[in-house]
Length: 351
Image (cartoon, rainbow, N blue to C red; front, top):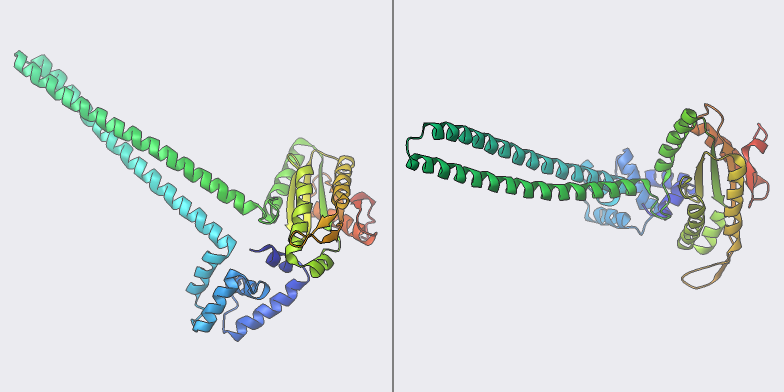
């Protein structure tokens, strides 16, 4: 998913994109299923993107948009579908690897059982042996059986070593897939899903240990005007710049995420409003202190500012409720002139 598409779908333009998407789908006789809507909203919102170009090719070729075609497009071009496919493939490979190891172990067990029977038989044979010839035959038989078992055990050791390496590789791949699934592609901060999961965990920890928990919501001021003036690519540079400041000052144990579009969210476990306000002021001042330049032309873009709101969780309060209060504080910052930090405790209930 391109940052441009994500920005459009989390702002006022989303409604226009949704209406146009339904019109385009109806015009091309495409059923409005959730998957088709997602595919064709990319077609409308990102007309020069790879998915849009492929859809245009299919339209010109007259190929009908069947469910199979939609699923293939999703697997090739939609991040979530590609991610699910990667997880499924890694899981399949892991299952095959474990099955192969299981087979090798069973074969080794059978070999060892046979060897045990050979030893038992040899022991009885040595007891009953009448002369040196019989004893030599028994020893030769044992030597052969021992060499065979040693060879099979070495083969098993090698197979287990190879399997251990492959399982480690798959584990690293799945860990990378997990990171991709929880990371915002534009900023490298956590994404919305990761934030929601972390917030639920942080609330549970706060209840269990009786520790404070403060949330903050930050938003780039006048970002739409900036985007309209300089274009989405330059807008993306601004988002990355603000994210870099937030990420540096919001490092572990704090948790920073791109919440959507030009909005960010932060979790401050164990920190009260006073500490959080100081951090948010530091972020605000640093963001506003830099004169930005457009990379492609070196033009001066001026400065960018951010507004933020924070709320400290009350005992037993859900993460959603804390976010609502932090949002209310953010909008108070916006209405009060922007480029400021507001504590939810200072926001009237009516807000």
